[in-house]
Image (cartoon, rainbow, N blue to C red):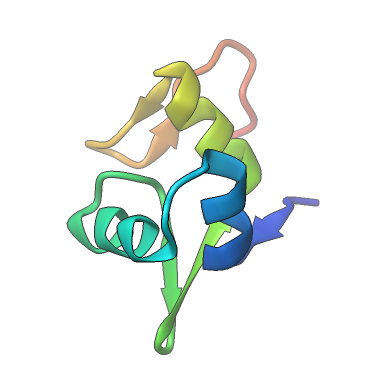
Length: 68
């Protein structure tokens, strides 16, 4: 089961300001899902993004053995 993070949780995790996290999400710079007026983040996708294995083009995790 994926761990879903709020903007505040992700900001703390990445040591960024919440506004920066929202800006990156809106610009498509980080993997995010918008639900109504709030952003949510899958921790596994964020970890893949940090590791540089997240493919922005198709939104798929390119890590070896990643679940599809």
